Length: 434
Ligand code: FAD
Image 1 (cartoon, rainbow, N blue to C red):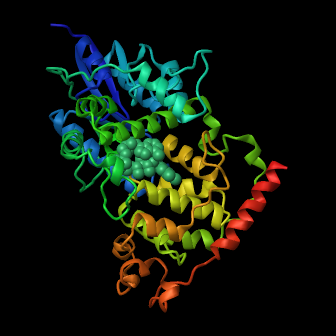
Image 2 (image 1 turned 90 degrees about the vertical axis):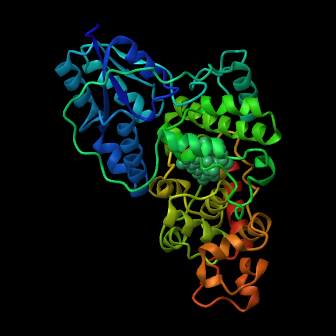
């Protein structure tokens, strides 16, 4: 029996099935399954993400018979030390394409005495692989999507039939009372009814989207597994869903190629855009006290649960940037603190899309009206009443415009006049174009 040992360093791939890096590690011999709590990333995450990660790690460890080894510290020191202790022949990871992750992996690689083997990634098609005929990458989603489909991806792989996990000292796993992990992710996915997705996905009141962004973020499921299931379904809903998964990959592709886009505009002319200093209006937005029910409901849902719907994310983001004239990076930072699915690539590139400074961005002059968006995507006001108790007594659609119906006790007046704010946003946009 082989006594060769390998380290499987888990990061954003907290699962055993459809995990080619783990298959590779297990093929070498005995495996030490490692997770490093990196103080830098841990410090940057808000409580919702820490909680979610802790739950996911607990579940992973359980599925490994309690053998997950957790260490705290700088990965550039921790990973080589443990590999040395074991005399490991290799360290296996699935590749990370985010700016910090790439730099961290290079540092780890430089300090290791054995190879760092990158197999697979958290994406069906790894960033940088989808290229046009001139060998260049895409800036616009639709051609990217076509090329992504044409590129294709491998079929999901099974979990290794048996892994000989090595036991080693581990620090305690962080506490969490959430239900998470690979089995929960698969159950959620297999129970999800995708057929009506294309019709209903924009409705905030129906809660009809999959909420798979959280398991995807932690790699409790791989998108390949989902794409294989979608291919069997062949409905308009399944097609629409596949397109959204491609958006996730497009965002990762953009960030890998333009690391500055994490916090700076992708389109350089937006460096000149004039924003206001964030002050009380940013506080009102974060706390759901802007006086615009659809915006406030979304921000309160986010604060209370760590999640909000995509349509709502677009409207609250547009409101911060184009009604309150606050730089998108303040909103993106708040989202990264509060979202359970907070993901640098999807978050920053979607904020930039809304703010007009990203790839394929919506034209700047298309400014969401927070009231008509609410009326359209929460037509009976059920969503805003669910999250804003002060509006409970306002019937149906009236809940979207309390000021027209005598107001609501304890609920603020609108903090801005939308029409004026819109004109001002357009004026500032004209200034950077001229
Ligand atoms: P579903 O509608 O069920 O979609 C299925 C999957 O497709 C999602 O789980 C997600 O992986 C992917 N997806 C859907 N829409 C998008 C999109 N616009 N961009 C990228 N991937 C998408 N998503 C994150 O995962 N993390 C973030 O930090 C994040 N920040 C965002 C910030 C803003 C301002 C906006 C407008 C969107 C953001 N999104 C982010 C994208 C999207 O809102 C969420 O992925 C989606 O709401 C998650 O809910 P769901 O899983 O029920 O989505």
